[in-house]
Amino acid sequence: MKLDSMYQDVILDHYKHPHGRGLRDGDAEVHHVNPTCGDEITLRVRYEGSRIADVSYEGQGCSISQASASVLNDLLVGKELAEARKIQGTFLELMHSKGQLEPDDAMEEVLEDAIAFAGVSKYPARVKCALLSWMAWKDATAQALGDSATKETA
Amino acid sequence: MTELPGLLTASDHRASDHRLLDEAIRKDFPILDRMIHDGKKLVYLDSAATSQKPRQVLDALNEYYERHNANVHRGVYTIAEEATALYEGARDKIAAFINAPSRDEVIFTKNASESLNLVANMLGWADEPYRVDHETEIVITEMEHHSNIVPWQLLSQRTGAKLKWFGITDDGRLDLSNIDEIITEKTKIVSFVLVSNILGTQNPVETIVRRAQEVGALVCVDASQAAPHQVLDVQALQADFVAFTGHKMAGPTGIGVLWGRQELLEDLPPFLGGGEMIETVSMHSSTYAPAPHKFEAGTPPIAQAVGLGAAVDYLTAIGMDRIAEHEHAITEYAVKRLLEVPDLRIIGPATAEDRGATISFTLGDIHPHDVGQVLDEQGIAVRVGHHCARPVCLRYGIPATTRASFYLYSTPAEVDALVEGLEHVRNFFG
Image (cartoon, rainbow over all chains, first blue to last red; front, side, top):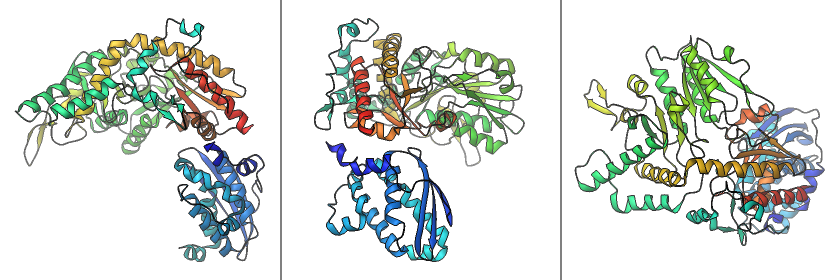
């Protein structure tokens, strides 16, 4: 069934048993919403130098938005900022692929569980759900690290 | 996946419900034969967002463009006269449909939002006694569509007028317990929805109009979710303005209506200026055409008005009272069946009394987006989200709802399909 390519077991697992959920100390906090459906996330980042010490979050929304935040936590905590940006860039590429991109081994290695979101990219209305926490993380990082981080991103 | 029942195999019990319309009318709506997702029949339960269009309306649009297309109120040639007659003929049809005392009280707009913005702007620029300013108050309700909130917020911000509103009770009705404190001598305009697009609630017009008249306030009724579904009689409503849109009542998009009482339309200033709305123009000043043209600047949506006229003919031929009866029967059945679904909570009146054929609900902790997505996979189209009525969601402490809404072509079998679809959703996320 087509739908199964969107609601992969990995996504449903993350939705039902989210990783790293709950707000903990952070250097910056952001609140992002998806106005079309009311998905919300409050997200904090904590850095130790350029290493991501923690990404904590609270939110409400659909399975895609909540599972995506859980996967983000898995993927980014403990990473160096440069590597985290590479992961985010790859995830964005996948989500903007409109279902046309066949993920290769290299991509799978970078994205791990996040590769399960490939099916979501076929549903334009749901791509925003999947990206909500990633945009929040980018915004929080810019706030936590100041201008230098923003410039590097640009 | 669970197999869904065939749509036209209503049980004897349902088929014998004399209130239901003959399912043969579904043949008038070509889109209802559409198959999606590998052979699943479309179950369209989003008529509150926009209705489907019968062949008769599609034909009227085609016929207009193929045989009569010209600009209106200008040319002296044959097809220009025909176009004008068709456009103005549509105005006559709508005037009759809403029992307007005069055809000149029917203003064509592009949708209900524009109609409501037009009223707000008439009052913002008006002289006494209609003028809305910092010493006056505007009254709306918490269950309005954003289109009946934001224009009044803008007017309030621009004039300094105070914006007040009625709240909602736990069971989805307007809380009018403090009506004398909300509508006061300072109130200039009370604008409220006749049937809520999210809760389905049918509001008690008479109580609100009586109080507004006591204090000399104008009354504007948003009838977007009423005009398609029930007899709409603007004289019986005793309102001053009534707004609705064409695309929810079997007409095309791009056409809306504002009805206003004639003496008000004569007194109130125009909002949009341009061609069509003038009498004479010099470089220093202009004088204006009488209503309704005073409020119809520029080339109007001609084909769309003609299409709406055809839609009104279609609905009238069936009978608005019969359509209302059909929808009431469907709503009764849907409320009963939905309440059988475990963890389902109706947001709004949980009975079929004084409510329209729009039912919002939550399903346990499953987010409406997920509900809608899994239903879509079974061919069932529902609306998910805050339905442009976010304050209602805030009122009930929920981020969004799933909404099923019915129309004259909806069937009990489609209600059954929805209920089975929801079972599937529960299993999927359970």
